[in-house]
Image (cartoon, rainbow, N blue to C red):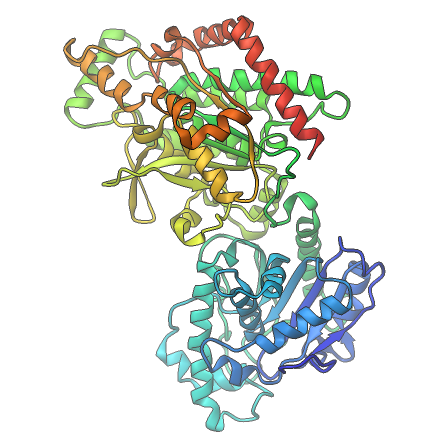
Length: 637
């Protein structure tokens, strides 16, 4: 299959409007011993042709023929260059090179299609055509495909009926092919590992699994639900009342299994084709540049930050005029980064795409729930905190923070997250920070791994350097929130992925440098035009000799000093281009900075200080200039 041939790629439709670059190529591949037509047909009814074409008339439906699958899978790595070249040539000839691709794979056909992603990944090839193809892969729909990367039991591998059923039609009887079949399984494990390591499981994915064993051969299913389920994150994984070989054969348009597949595909394609959810990284036109938002930590004083952002949004929408009434921060900023409670705001504004009014309400509710006092009498509360410090106990309950974050997520779910939870049967606790839905803006939070000094950025997106962020794929939203908020003495540390994390404020309570460096790493070809850094008040050095309270305040202020990072942006030659383009620091006064991180009873005072800042000449001037920058960005978007 080293050369293009109509025997390799069969087009089942010319596609109404199939040259429209906004439509997709739906590419199907059979399993071992399968066929481009027979695998997907039952009694003359080929659902790829008779069901998908009417369902998605603007898409091309392609079925691949791959009779040499067993010999290819028995080698490592699988040599599928011929197939890749065929796909590239077909797309070029059909003027489809920029169209998104959705892969449908049955059994080991899904493994081969995973290897297409792996082989075309930029880290594995210098070929420009391969890289271009990789960039247009939008998602996968798997039918009975194994997703594990560790060996199945030897007993299963040595059961002849397993291989006979799995390869039915490939070689008639097991014969001399048992060794090749076993090697194919181990190759599958390696492909699965590479696919996950390179971020393949972060694509849009649906999985279907069988609930019946092969007729007359075994009472057990060949590929179990567990084996058909992704490892790294929850995705819709749905049962079909069929055996392995019949998993993609539907007898008629009225087949209940087909109806279940088409319903899932309908939701899947809406998400895949939505311009805002495509997985291409946004490239900012040179005329507008990138707009970045950095959010300091500060406990309850994060309320100051979100009130400032709310006023900024009001002014920006006013200047932009008609059509901007419902725009949110995620519509204006390319990247939002935060530390501690600034990290919570980054999750709300970025990952959850909340508007500022909802964010203010949620933040107030969360703060009151998390920072509630155990004792109403100030002396007793102070004594409790001092006792906890002496005993190395945190002042506040990490489980309360988890519950508050999960409640906030549940109340502000994106439609895509709601659909995924319904289909997968998971809960909000299972939602990962990294999402297969392309948010209007990227967001990350800062945390510090135990025994390390370097800040870790826990992201809502797959970074360009995937290996540098491998643990982040396993962070749930609540875990990320806990990790960035685990301020010493305030909250206990959290373990995620076998690593303990502390509040990022220990190293970067003002994360502006992290935000700038992240933008340069993730958008290397784009200039940064605007950086807006929102603080939670200036800090005054405390006297370390003024008793236990003075010592604690001294340590907290020392660890959470924000001005050094602000001064670095103002003075360090590395950031000369940032200063030239537009750097804005919106921060409160010493009076705001003096408020304790957990002083939930002073939230009215924090609101008053925010309004005072916004009414000041400095506040009005800063808000006005920032709003003009955001409007300029929006008009060139």
